[in-house]
Amino acid sequence: MFQNIEQLAVFLDGFGGEYFGEEDNGENKNVVTGKKSFLEGYKKILTSMHEEEALTNFARWEPPHGSFQFGYPWKHYLEIGKLSRQCAYKIEELHNCITSKMKVQSEFLKIIQDSCMELGKESGITLQDLSTVVKQMTYPKAAPKHIKNLKKTAGNLKAVLKMVTLENANVLEDVLSGAMLASLLVDIVGCIEDIAESIIELAHLAKFKGADPAIRQEKLSQQSGNIKVHL
Image 1 (cartoon, rainbow, N blue to C red):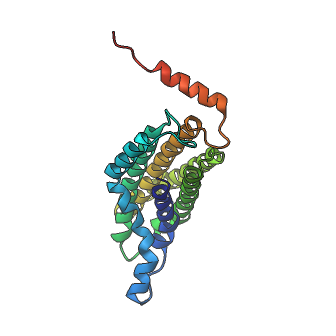
Image 2 (cartoon, one colour):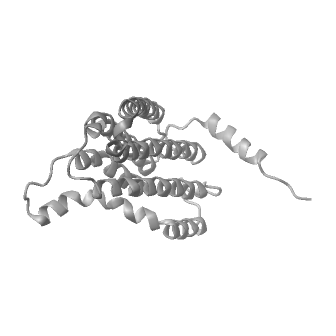
Image 3 (cartoon, rainbow, N blue to C red):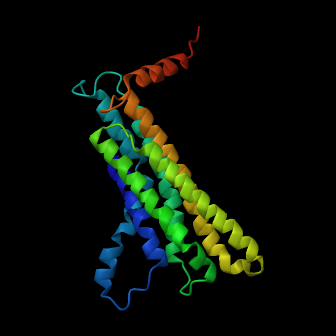
């Protein structure tokens, strides 16, 4: 599970340099392919559902041991997997922007470049931290701060996007590809926020290190209250 989140992080961390960077200047094809392998890692997440379900069902049948006692919230791992796939599908669209990018960058792309690269980097940092949290089973204390920074950066990008598109409405064709790129990045922020919220909930229910027991009890009570009894 954490490897999938890490693959999302790796892509977003490096996509800005790939999209806005210079051409490969005649480098050996094998060298270039190796450098760009990070662009492909997310693809296995797109077809990970059946494997995750199989592993989760297997884990449920194992005898309780260590941290994995009776009632362990395995279904939350499936939920995180589903949210990761939704993010991966957005990243696939982002990847298509990279592979279909026109050789000559427009002025519009130059204007939004810094904001897009900052949002990509911040997204990568957030997902990398969440990946480590799941791997080490520790409470994601830094998640609220990361999400706050992401929202602020996304807001800055949207402001730039709105200002530039309005000022350049007569050259809409030039801004279309950049607007799509920026929109996808903003959508991905929403995906990351959903992943973070699900991991925070998992951390409480699974008693990750540093989680507040009182909040865990509150969430368990909420779950019990949602159970319907059929007479």
